Image (cartoon, rainbow, N blue to C red):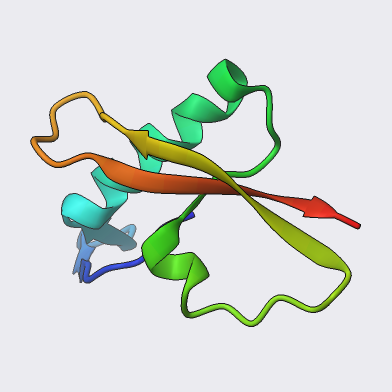
Length: 83
């Protein structure tokens, strides 16, 4: 999970579809792909985690700063476990 700005649009004449684009979608996809590597069910960027209000039922576990393919800046990732 991650957050950021995305562009939305509608394409098609007969069959219309809504499309989303933006760097945040690419980054989120790269984060999701790392779940298997770290053997976790969910990865959350620290940027998003700071905005979330986790109840005492959940615990955030830092994974660390990770390099994502195609990205210059590393991203700080966490996983969330049930207490």
